[in-house]
Length: 478
Image 1 (cartoon, rainbow, N blue to C red):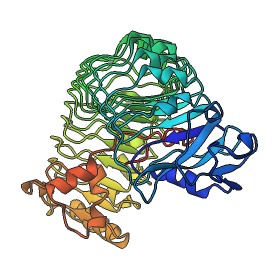
Image 2 (spheres, one colour):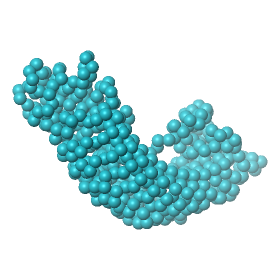
Image 3 (spheres, helix red, strand yellow):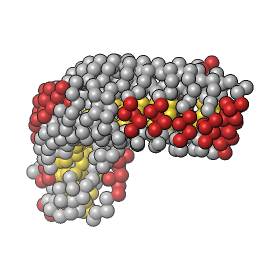
């Protein structure tokens, strides 16, 4: 298995590798040779008690080493594993942040993973191209403003993480990295993606969340292996007109942009999550064949209706259409038998709830606060699974059926430890913009609505995950 080097602030994953290795050790005995018996030919762990020389030919075979702070305050090599040994890591314990990459790193020609997360590195040397075996390179949370062209010579690189730096662009030669599968460049100031990205035909995860992109570019639309695309929190006004190659896409995150319309999404037949919130959409595009869609979030737009094909989305479980222009509850939603969470709050809905909604046997959360619904059909009393319901402040409780439904649902919610509300909570600024995601947290708060800063801190940061990528992407925090 490939080795790893990690130089970051107490990377917990790195520390775990270093401390759980069960490998026979060989102790240095005071000679000037780095390795006893002349090398690292066998599968063993070498423990060093003194600072040693690493600039030797044998050191180039290192795949995994451990650095620790000695009692004298010096950085010392305490262990090393050769390329035939088990996977370990190079990490820092209690050290100040690095401002440059140690030169010796560039002589480790068999290195497969280099983790420099959470330092103060401002420049990536061109010597990086010497690490020809590198598969994973993590540079997130540094101060890097430019990635050198030499980086694109690492043709075996599969994971490149450069999030939270000071980048305004990616190398124009990015397309040379034909093995690249994961590119995390979120939280920078990138204004445009290089056209050559279209040659990264194995790219599966592209995350450019929170940058300054004004367009996505046609080359991105032809990437056939994309599984997750996160371009949220940018300045996009449109997407490429044809998205026919995204047949493997499972997560499409477009929230917090300036999108006024979208191209047809019919070809995205494996899509599971579609996030469109906080744009300027007046309608949703054609979404035929999206039979695997589980979550649709289009809150805070100007949408007034849904495509007819929504009725055939048999996997759809979470729909958030809060703060749009709906005047009636879309009848298609009553056909979505997998529905668990439905948020239509803060819409100008003034028509009754369709009786067919009583057939949504899995519905747990129904939010209609801020709507103008006055009457409830008696059939709704059959919503046996609901435990969180807000019906707004306009109900005519003198209507016998409406009153019976409210009392029945309230009793049902109470038995499950949930709640039913009918008041106008919009008089409280702390609940004015609560979405279904936050209402899901309500019962955990013992009835106390969190202050505005706390609320935002819990809701922000849902940016999409790469956990399903078999743990290949190191995403631990500092």
